[in-house]
Image 1 (tube, rainbow, N blue to C red):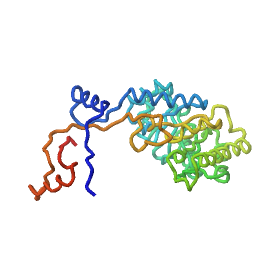
Image 2: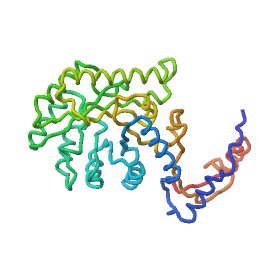
Image 3: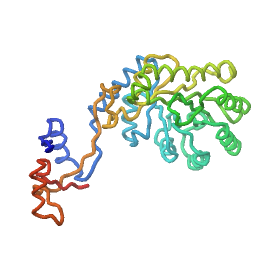
Image 4: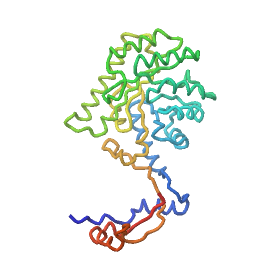
Length: 327
């Protein structure tokens, strides 16, 4: 029952990072990104994207630093972004005026209105921005916004491919959306589909289905939406539609299919601890939170117990050193 000693020296890797921070760091808490490891992860993603014949879209909320997005985008050769937050969206449009931006969640129509009110610069929303829509009611609101602004909105339809967090589930739900878009060509343009499927790579309990079986269901749902659109609304089906899918845990599985046109990846570029998944085994951890240690005071001393605290250090060797950190 006695706790084992979990202490130990730094590995050579962390010793080098520690020395670097002591010599050149700001002496306050930082998010440290290892660019060599990041480069490796970018290259792993690019090799997969190339094998699958797809484009890469960077999820900006998972890489929320303009400099970091620019670094990854240049190495990966992509200007495609996925945005989830209206202030970030306005910032993206100014910082990356050549970007192609797809919303990653359906925003309230007021958020879209605020984007247009605050937008400035050469970024052209009518050509470079896709709003994500999930219901006819939501689309009606966006149609009213487009009429009021006297502009045309590009509409990407969210598909529920098994995550059940929102989106169109079947053809009866998809039909009214496509009909409304087709009836208002001066204000609405069909831009494609988005089907987010991270659960197939997140280690769902085996009793619920293997990753391969879950992935097959995802693609069956996606294919059904594509087939319905091409059959019922052929005029909306144009070359160059955005058929977005995947997510960091599942992007590798999409090497196997030729339906989608692009995959979205964000967190896999940095691989924090909660993305230590079998599907990302080739990726390397590249991001760490580091904070200075201010002092070391020996065995733990608990307020009010004073010298009686020695009992804790006797029982648990991990309480024989106390470190005060910057926080």
